[in-house]
Image (cartoon, rainbow, N blue to C red; front, top):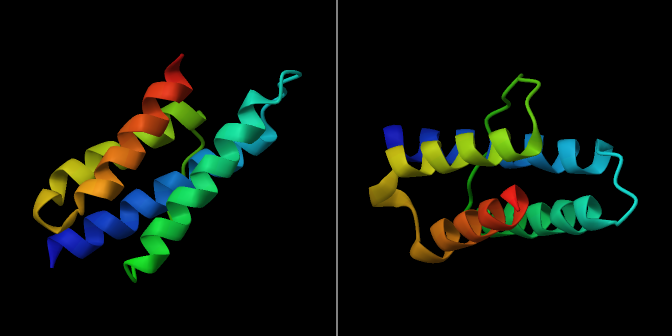
Amino acid sequence: MDGPVGLGRALGFVRCATRAFVAEADASGEALFLASECLDLEALFAELGVVPEPVDVEVSAVEALERASTELAGARPFVPLGLWAAVQALLARAVR
């Protein structure tokens, strides 16, 4: 079924964003804060029983979150509103 696959890919991209934020050189600590928010998102996916689909890409954290958002848009009927809102809110903070 396409919906759950899209959710798994979205989780894979959130994990990519987490790694990218942790690896980012940021003296202000904002990147680590965003990484912790990614971990919160991962927990939301886990509560839904989503199995992550590994994605092997080297992209920025923002691009990974954009790809996660795209995957969720493609699986819209299966995406709880709270999960959608959390991803969009994190993406909005990350692009600032």
